[in-house]
Length: 463
Ligand SMILES: Nc1ncnc2c1ncn2[C@@H]1O[C@H](COP(=O)(O)OP(=O)(O)O)[C@@H](O)[C@H]1O
Ligand SMILES: [Mg+2]
Image (cartoon, rainbow, N blue to C red; front, side, top):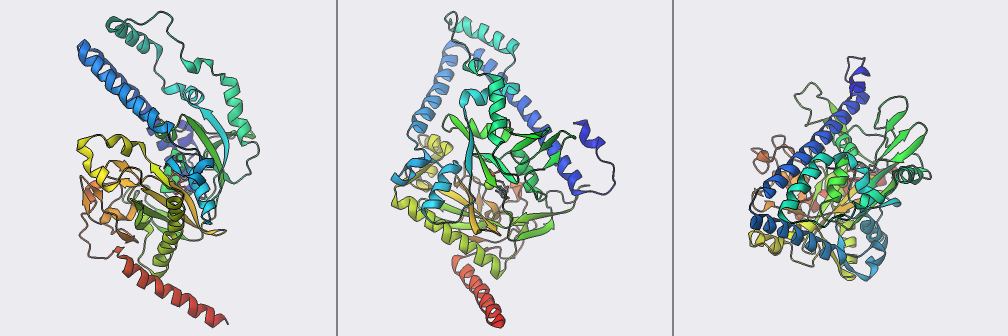
């Protein structure tokens, strides 16, 4: 990654330099994560193998049972074209949310599948984090001592995947995608986009940063020479994919939307560091649904939040659209599924999960963006905020927080006080500020009404 530093000639903190720096740190931490993952995996594997035979078999048995449960569960999940007739679907799968927005007449950012990879093809692309041979050999040797394996055990299925064809697929998928489109998986966006969107410096999806004259990294794609290819090796996407979904991965191309409004402020994540500076974030809204009911809405990047009539109005506009999608889901008997929640259902340690998110109900989050072209539009849907994971609670981190139950999502969160830091869970629910950042529904409605009056007056003045 030496290129990054050699490219920096100026002394002022330019945006392009900052982007490259963050991109570099993201890549480095991906590498570290991969290495860590391998180490952790082997530490666990050797520990298991050193156990007595019965313990070892017990552990393997548990792993198999979880694997079986995941397979049984995902095999009942529907595909997006079936959504009209209802059924259980993966709450992280963007394809379903797009279908639901269409059925509900809710504006949405379109997304077309440009590439589908089987689990084997996808695994092949992640060869770099696969287990080195000398370790698997010694693992197998020890395993053989405990349970003798048949000779010529079946070949790794990824060996049948042709790498040249696979590479070609990544390039061909991009050939008809217009410029100024971003690419993401059906489950989530890539690390690079997330890191750069998080510091508020993305204004085009084509050029997040330039590696050298021949390689440019975009949002979900990379330009090599004069041809673009899907970036299918993103670490964030890979980790999400392996955490309990159907065995295929889809990549979608989406037009990059111009946000209608931005919030500009000092980036709280860089505050006090040598990289301190301002960022610019689009106004986005997250609506929270628990057990078939909308329970809250929050500004998505809460550090840009302000308690204003316009923001209250926009938050409620997102809620109205979310309600239309929820109505469609209830009418057609849709059920949201999130694997972590499903796996927790049998454990008595997680009773509270069944109470708050009963089986076969709808619990999820819906994210909207204020766009210039479409107005308030659906960006994506995702899992609910649960105490064992799922969606980030955004502005609700400044409300009441309980280690066991997570953040209480209730009302309209328009900002976070400055002493609550998103990245530091210790500050969640512990603000000393007396400022009211989370409004009740009634307070938000009263405030939003002022915005409507303001708009009405401006309109009359123009007449
Ligand atoms: N098509 C798009 N147009 C404009 N901004 C986008 C678009 N897609 C993503 N973004 C920005 O990138 C952020 C992350 O992308 P998103 O698709 O929500 O994936 P994830 O949250 O899984 O990373 C969004 O919150 C938004 O700010
Ligand atoms: Mg998102």
